[in-house]
Image (cartoon, rainbow, N blue to C red; front, top):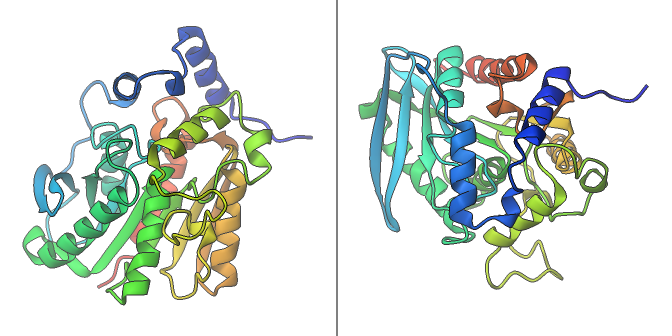
Length: 315
């Protein structure tokens, strides 16, 4: 018997089809952003925390917004969260509910970064901003009530790509590493390189044309399709060596065109001696971390990620 999509996920797809919104890749970028913002931003009272604070980081490329979610008083471990959206869509508001739930469940301080987006800012802009934020958080940890030796990276989709690339970059530069990396359904490789792009590339929340559109927005002008891995921080699965990276949680979904590359990245990490927990949601589709209001199982998977962070808390 073949795998079956969660009935609540299917109901969500049915609602989306009934609404009849045009595909994102057919829209101007500003309109696509507005459509996603309307779909994802939480309505009603948000989950209460000890505090939620908006900061402005003075980066070399201009001010970066960072939202800090504190679940309780005291000195806490800290997670830098990098949102998905194909490096093009979404922001700290679209991921506000997710950050609140992770912070409350894990007991970690969660820092959500509004990095520069494509196509206005192509690779390596998002990675540069993530690295700046990571270093700023380490330096500022004592005054933020955080432990500089207990910082993790959390990313979903394109944000998981950037989180994985940042872990590689920090290792290569000999910088203090994160204690953990949680990568949810990562975009880890060149589009259409894996069978799941054809097998699961239509009828779900993410399809093949949208993956290509996102990648086209993000790729640098000098990208050479004949040498897609020349830059080791563009597609993490193409990195020549994954040894010495932080322990990882890799989450994949069965009904996701990115399924195979996420599975392959988890397998390559394990083969390189990196401690890996691979969670494959065989009844879910891409983006499940953002739909817990509609899909009960999605909430359970968010809590699983938060519990993985909690297990990494260091004295």
